[in-house]
Length: 633
Image (cartoon, rainbow, N blue to C red; front, side, top):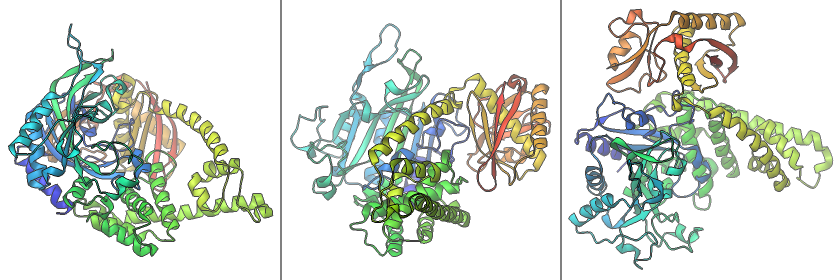
């Protein structure tokens, strides 16, 4: 069973159960400064989980491309990848645990034919510190007895033996007789921000139930694991058990006073990593040996002349990072020193570091193998292959130049002093890090050593300063819906239309970041705007603000929106109906509109509420892209 087969079975399974398939949302979110990448299937659906009506109804299904930068350092073991596809089904106030759990069990055991004896289930054990606001009665979160009850029914239907393990894992000496394991908020609670005490006001969350696949107690990685001396159980992270499915029962919302309030309608948010489901169907404990990754590993073996055995970590990093880099590049991101571009640069360079360690030189064949493996489920990467390859190879060439410059810096400073030694000062290592962008590992890969303790202290000073800046950068993002941020959001629509009027309709938005302090707008353009052009842009936007045009949205058929000339950052990612914002005019009189855009909102009701628009500066974003910073109000 291939990755494509699993996707096909999953979509058809839920379409038969009256779910509407929705498109894959952009890997780089639009107008969400709180995150650089889409890191979960539910992330684009938060407004609908909170009660907003979805144009496709209350039962949805899709396959979402996701990237998690936090997992970069985890890559190298048998199961972690930074980029993966998340199979998702959602109930927006429709069905709940009583239908989700039986469907999940049926899909895993009937459609994918996974052996029941290899499946282990986890549920929420409760949290006495999390309080539910229910008028005079304010209980704590308790054990998810409903989930346990529904799982018991499914196991009993097929005659499976089971016990419910208590939270101390002491009620049975035989792991194989237990099927249901309760865990606390660190394992079986889900929100974008983590457990209840970490959730900001307004954030939705809820208990989850997860399914793990057991690769057996004799798995070699289990013996080598740092957890090998601990009592084994599904969440011990020894490598024996791999999570393959997670159903979140989104039923709470954090309040300003720190309590949790029940949502008017509880939701279901299921996520199943495609790569891990493939791992289970092939009963292959190493995700990089599955039919999806094996050809990519073969390309690395051919380029380096090395075997996979004994070089697993390096080859896993290369395979994962080039795969992630391919998809991020496909999202029109270019390597840079900030935001998504920084992550892309880090992925490419880290993959090259490991390629060089294995005496490989060129990454071309690896890129090609990635495209060949993913083109059936993601055909656009084949369409954009040349652009993807050229972007990655250009960064590889730049990295080669960076390494050479760092060598010249050391040679010029030390001259003959390095004769017989390769040791440099920690301060010089830090200069190479800040000036040339080489990490300590990359510096050592050039053959230099330095006092790593002194370097770490210097890095701490640097990070403390960076954290202050980051706190300012992400404070008050669009997700908080503050008035200043909403004003900035509307201003980006005015600026987008003004730029297209000035320079033509080939110009389009490539990204944005809107906070309560400033607006950042990215677009394709091949030169610096003149002072006169910036002044003209400011004037056009301010004139539209003064005109006080009405702003409103309508849910209309996507085809009709395109016919009206609606624009958007990702025009091909919407379903049959889309949320369209009109500035002036409406769907009946689109010719009277100044701006028509695909957008999730929110916006002011009249442009006059934006008050004023002032450009702060412009920056270059690599070849063919510009960035404008502005203030509103």
